[in-house]
Image (cartoon, rainbow, N blue to C red; front, side, top):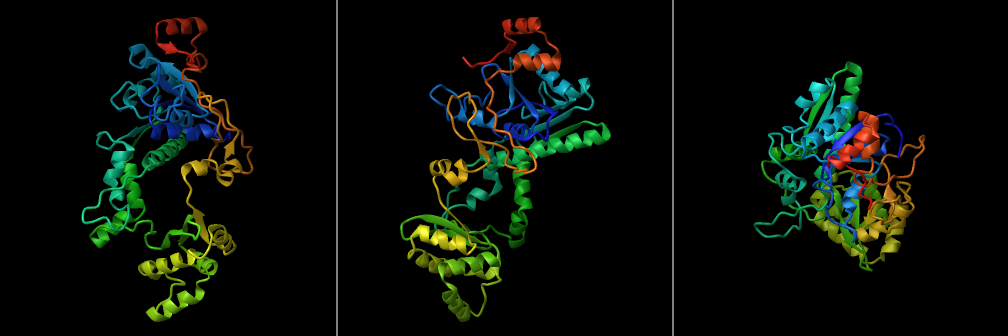
Length: 407
């Protein structure tokens, strides 16, 4: 946790991954992020995987360091309170539809300089999720083993990458809108379609231009890196590891570690070319090079080869299962990214990540737990809307507001 955004309050009305991620990143940098949910939990409150007590570990981790208000968002009164919270605070992050009680047009009736950042599916209003957007991007049909027949099936990715990229872009867009308001006094409506983030990223990567230039699709490469030297290999003791050489220095490091300088020189002489300074040559002749590197890898146990690779300044990493990664001292236990486990609502203790950015000149506070649903309802309604304890009690009795579900 850092306090770079202290003094900034954000209302978040969201579900699933992208929108909560935006709020999470802001909270980790010190913003007060107030998540507003339906009483009993929204669409993502019980998202898999659940603990034996029924707590979602996904929800718990995407909502760290936030405050929680639970309202009956199906009722006019509950929706009115949510809209008032947004307008009093002045900035809203949401993925509820634009034509809703939180439409920007309705909010600016109460606050002209309102900032509304809304995540959508597609820009034309169609629904979308990471998994369907990814299908449209083209990547699943470029992924997978090389030899999969004439009609290879798509290979979906497990990580909802477009959701997380969209969440990060949403946080960035919010801060850009805040800077604009500070300079001009004007609010903003910012719409971020998940589909546009995906297809725009395809374009930013150069892949779209490549497809149009070549006039066809790129072939599947298995685990090989497109346009450079890199692939997975297996050591004598059966360990799988990945190497990558995107620079001439990295290539030289691989040759030194594997002891292949003479063998590579012989291939260069036979082919009449050089691999030392050419990604193109290394990629174009990858199959012969891969066979040579694999034959060499089979003569080393991984621990010995890893030491040689590290000493040579090569770029490599061993494949781990995710369970192995979660228990790896270098990745987690000894990584300052992770702090001690806070009092998680699930009751399960595990290392908690803080912000990914490392700011040495600022003190890094320990990660905070996710809230219990409705934990801060009374506090927030009092501080933001001036609702006293008597009125708050009536709202609770009427089923408009709920307090902590700690049980």
